Length: 433
Image 1: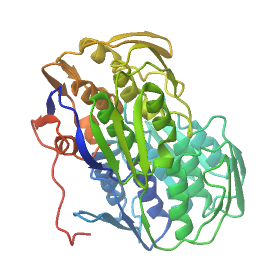
Image 2: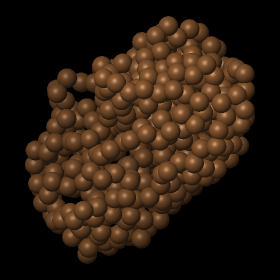
Image 3: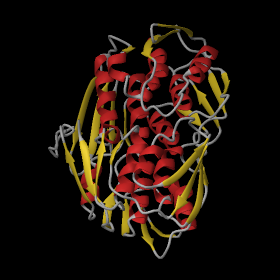
């Protein structure tokens, strides 16, 4: 099992280029189910969850080519026939995004059998909002032996009001509605950039969608969708993580190839803490000038402060003077990184959904263990400033969502190396698909 060994104390300097957004690429890959023609996606990140999605689609009968080169990370997907519309547990058990194939499968084939989603252990990820929406569209759904089975001759347009904002639920039902009979109106939708990116692909495929990126989305169903080419947006969570890496290390770091408009909540909070953020085009430069000051955050749906940046911000708060309160409103079990940060010397106390961080504290090296994707990133950030050599175990979590994070950090001055069974390299030929 792979580990990171990281020696702290080096300010990061230079430029890091951001990869494509995993949380956009996964639903866009699932959208390929909706057509018999080829879907070509560019800027696909080289991470474990993408490989899991490839295996999932291939197991259903799709032709999937993944290729990684210097210029483009690309995939070509053709679902000419879906001989086995089942998302099997042995494939999807490590990835909660497996529920995203439910809507496309039933819309395209009239039947779907999907294992209940897995993924990080950060709290409940109920699929009931997907089920209620599909039932409103005429699907018959049963659940047994850890699988959901859905059937419908053809889905019907419906009015759907989400009980709570759900990103995957919005994406799943938006895909299902593109091939439904009639109009679907969805209210209280997620507004994340990844939803808008999926809508852009679906529109290029011939879907009729209005309002993506707002709380109200209207979809007029069509008879069929066709092939398309689409470029995945940059990963705003990866970008935010590296912004904090530059800030916590006291460095001068430029994050390139990002969309600053997607990071407004993060950059505003960094400036409140005392980090200088300079935005120019698709780059953000961060510099820590003087002492950092504690500041509170409260995670919210987009455009609020993202839950996927909470753990990373907490690592930064340990290096800020004063008290910072971190309130988690999205997931009920997303403080699993706290005990590991405390092992490194952090002063953090948790009371329900709020963690109180008292800084500045001197962090020291320790053997720590990653519990989920973003928790592992917070441990890397803390290790950047810890005295001595920190060993981070179970880094397969970070491989799910960060493309070669150790290479990117090493390129700007971090002393980090990987030991163990290295995550298998993908094809790197420039002409690969």
